[in-house]
Amino acid sequence: MTEHASTFIKPLHLLLTLSLIVGLLFLIGLAMYLIVAPLLFTYQQVNLPVLMQEGLQINLSCTAKSLSAYILYTAVILVTVSFALLFLFFLRKAVSLLLKPQLFSDTLSKSLCTMGWFILLFSYAKQLHLFLYVQQVPNELHEILHFTFTPITEGALYALSFFVLAKVFGHALQLQHEVEQTV
Image 1: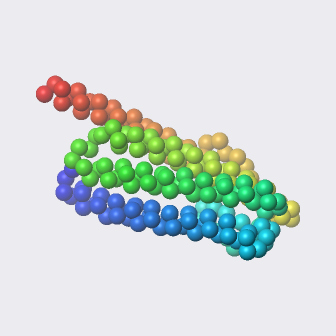
Image 2 (image 1 turned 30 degrees about the vertical axis):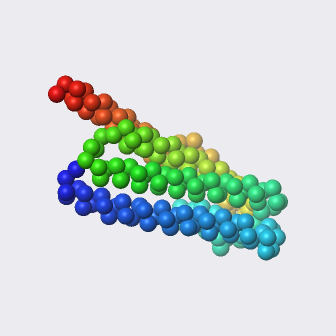
Image 3 (image 1 turned 180 degrees about the horizontal axis):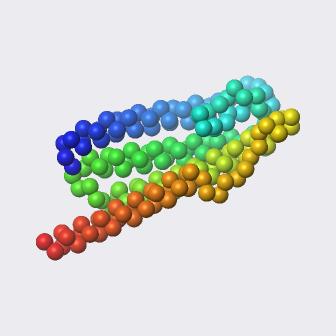
């Protein structure tokens, strides 16, 4: 890798590392809120956080209708955020592999494929999360807030591009091995 490209990748690697640390702290904080708040109050008094395009929203007045709904909602939102963090972890891993002299490695191809799976899982887990949120919304808001399942999401298209990139890098690695054996 050239020195010029390395100057761009190193700050990106640092940014992804910091993002991963902040994301883990956020996940721990969210888990603490969702576990401790019902112990201090009742689950009916705890506002449910919702993942929107703009980020996490807690200020919306929506509470769980039952304890089982609260537990399911808590599990789904924590798993959804975990999928996003795992995607970020493998993205950081792929960027760190770009700092190495041998660009085409089997690990990079596997990381890209894994990133595709995590973004796909995140995309559908977020839909499940929004479905569960809409189920908890008071009846008078059902006309305003509604849920529509989307089979082909943006995340599915992003995942497809990661799968294609993984195949391209895998094929490039195979070609590199063939050239090394020829020489």
